[in-house]
Amino acid sequence: MQGRITSFEKKEFIYWFLNKFELQRREAAWLLTYVASNATLLDHVHFVDNTESLSKSICIASRCSNNRPFIFTKNRRTSDDVETAFYDLRAYSEEELYICLSFKGNSISPEYAAVLEANPMDRQNLTQNYAFSLLAEIILDEVSKEYRKRTLYDEIDRALAERNKEKFLQLSEEWRLLLET
Image 1 (cartoon, rainbow, N blue to C red):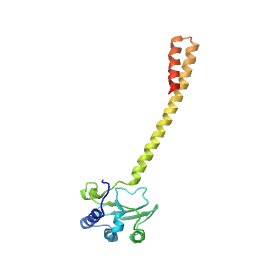
Image 2: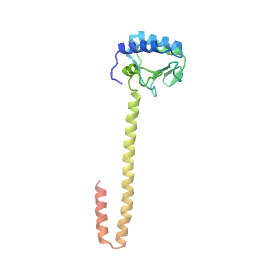
Image 3: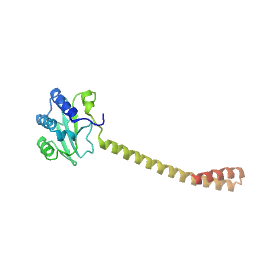
Image 4: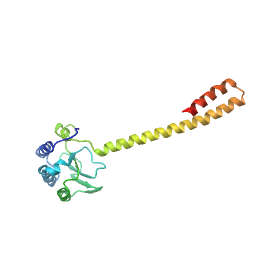
């Protein structure tokens, strides 16, 4: 996965893909040909592994794939109608479009890897997951500290009740250090 992929590279890849694989829906091939021929649209096209949480995406499967033939998603609404996708692409060619292709060997294809980009929502999800794990760690630390305070307080009381000066001084020092952190 790279950073910036040129429109020329995307166009070349689309033509390679169309020459190499037969799609489950012939209209999807026409749609990809339209995408390859539209420079404005190509500037906003991104090839991704998955389209989860993306606002506008198209998933296309070749005949050698068991996935659904065609899925167009925009703002969480999905359609299997290629014509709907075509009219949207024509009307809103400057919106970001994420395309996921399902074909035999896509995970090991150097041609696909050359144009493949990371799903931007994956990075956001990773950031959110990191933030949640950090928050959970902070909460766990606080709960652990509160539990240790309670048990230490009980142990100090026990040392006092048993008149164990050595144990009392050791636990009091631990209590002081715990309060400083």
